[in-house]
Image 1 (cartoon, rainbow, N blue to C red):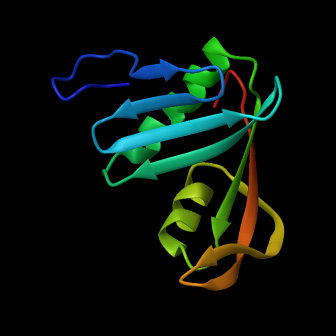
Image 2: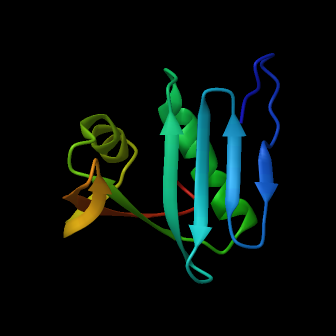
Length: 119
């Protein structure tokens, strides 16, 4: 990833239960479900976030055995849905009444993305 001063370095904190990659204005968290699959959480408020997301995917390919990501996004979060689709996540289904917001159950959209050495 690229730091504020333009230098490239890993912004990783590797825990037994999750991998967090951080750069100012961008964070991705991957919670491994098994040796090859992880639950993906990507937060961003930067222009250029697409490249930072791809950098985090490259990191996973280089440093882990994770090759499949899944994401569950509430249907009302249009910005997150658009970003997930932009970075290559594909919709695989709807999980009905699976997310609680303001005391009401709402649906989530399930996404998946396959990782490879050549993004």
